[in-house]
Length: 216
Image (cartoon, rainbow, N blue to C red):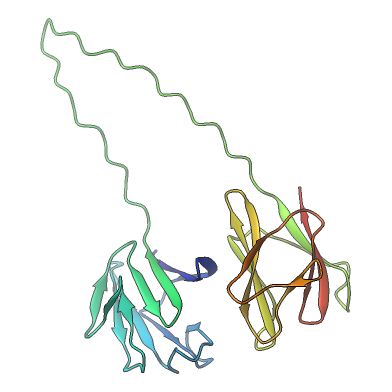
């Protein structure tokens, strides 16, 4: 199933599966992908998914335009896996299901011909999973703990303050997503577009709530 990876300043905000024939992007709340940014029009663009899984993008007469790999979209344009659609400061990367692996070319061995010896390939060591959670330490939900099982987990109140915790290979990072109130990490406010690595025991304040990052 094709899907979109929504990022800003290199930080992953969300992953959106393209399950419908039309997936609309814009600033107004009724869009399928809502991007609350002044550079984004109310109804900015639409992704069109065909029954065969192919995806195309069409600009809906937006003020600032829609770009694919740096080129402005003038008409409906077909997309391929890895293409990047730019809407304002946001980038929406198109992801498709991995293709079936290509088998090695067959070798024909004639009588009397010895095939070349092939050393067995060592199995790669299994990657240790990162287990982490956020525990609420204040307010009505104090004591509640939420496991960070997704690549990106958003926290806060839409329209007030929203932050994201993104899982990376080396650990987790915290970033501001939207809202006038910035998340506070260990008493220091994050700047717009800034990402900060998280470690076990870090304290996060967001939208009037306090929480603790926990990692095993």
